[in-house]
Image (tube, rainbow, N blue to C red; front, side, top):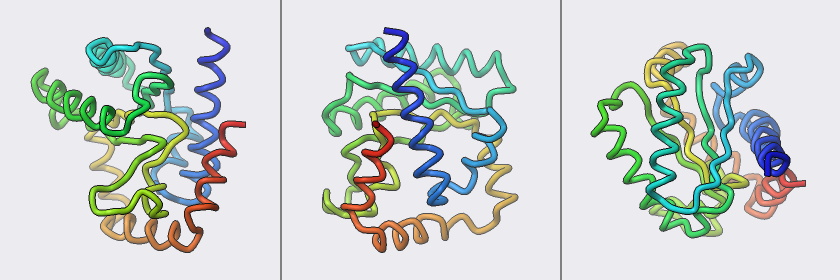
Length: 182
């Protein structure tokens, strides 16, 4: 099992390097990746309530390890359905608020079938949030605010990503995503 988890973690990091960083989907990712500040945790739970417990366990781990900037919590088997995944995200965000972590941590969401509410499933723009596996990205809110202050106008990032991915096309974006799994 550990070997399979290591493979999933490596595939996830390959996606971050070869897609997120190389295509500048997130201009903040390269620094953290190169600095070794990104943690990848593979969660094998098959129940949503256990996945929520795993999320809080990871938040507590981050609380105790301030040298780690961010965690990708990867669910390789639990959220095959994008709608089921969105239900989990809603519960996870509510739980973070309930436990007093609002303003301390935030979630970014990624799924192999990610589809924005106003987009068609085949729209290339969806690839900004498509990943090899369902995952939530736990970010430290304070670090996000510092990165935004340093970067400046972050409103242009989604627009640039949409234009870039539209120019690439869905077929090319899908091939890039699948390449991470090899």
